Image (cartoon, rainbow, N blue to C red; front, side, top):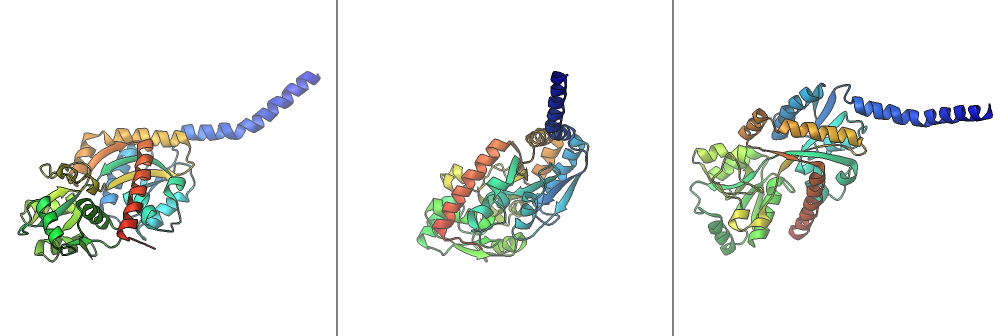
Amino acid sequence: MMNKRHFLQTLALAATLLGPAMTTAQAQEAWPTKPIRLVVPFPPGGGTDLVARALGQKLGERLKQPVVIDNRPGASTIIGTDAVAKAAPDGYTLLLSGSTSFTVNPALRAKLPYEPMRDLAPIAIVARTPLVLVVAQNAPWKTVDQLVAAAKAKPQGIRYATFGTGSGPHLAGELFALAAGIKLQDIPYKGSAQSTLAAISGEIDIDIDTVATVAPHIQAGKLRALGIVGASRSSLLPDVKTLAEQKLPDATFDAWYGFAAPAKTPAPVVERLARELTAVMADPALQAQLKAQGMEPAAIGAAAFRSQMESEIARYRALAHRAGIAME
């Protein structure tokens, strides 16, 4: 009787201890059972939003649950990114953002309400959006070498457009100047529409913007492309060499879009998301849709994503120190 009673007590205790774990495991296995919120820290209609809506629809079809886009713009993506970092780690709140959220902000800002390496679980990099260095069609420089020679002859006499301190074009211009051993003068504009017109008119000498933004003006003969700033050539401008191919590998500035979840999201959920995103990105129709928007599809997993975050944060911090870039 004592042995039987002891056995039953032990069994009851085991059930009590294992019950929550079994419930959690069952919940993870059943995930998802309700709509998923995909936070985009940009307004509707921009590049990140377009990627989110294209991938969200396909991902929802595979998961058999709606993926609802939640645009949370503001404070250079900090508002939306922080909302995800502080969300419940249950797989029902995800982030899709550009490299600004993951590497640029933590590298350039002394204080952030979140720490990406600690508070976010990288899932996958899904696309790259190459930048291109352009000049007016009637500019005297037809090659990067000619532009560099002119800048060396006239330090800070060559002006380039940015969207403000710490923006992608600002960092890309600083990396280009550092790699080429030149000094450029940055001129801030409110956005691509203004900076593109300024480049066409000759108000500035260099514009560094997304291929999607300036390709129509290149094809119309208003701008001349001197080099792709990203790691690889663009499918929209396949004949334009990268700056790395033109002996300036340190000028490479990679702009990309990544999926992440709150830290401590269960590993099975993150792994499922990674598998489904890989399958989604293999869809030829989706690839064609992204390429038509000037983006290059990618499928880079969590480990490589985290490694890229680490290396870019270190690189941009070093650049900010050398160039005196400081942001509140």
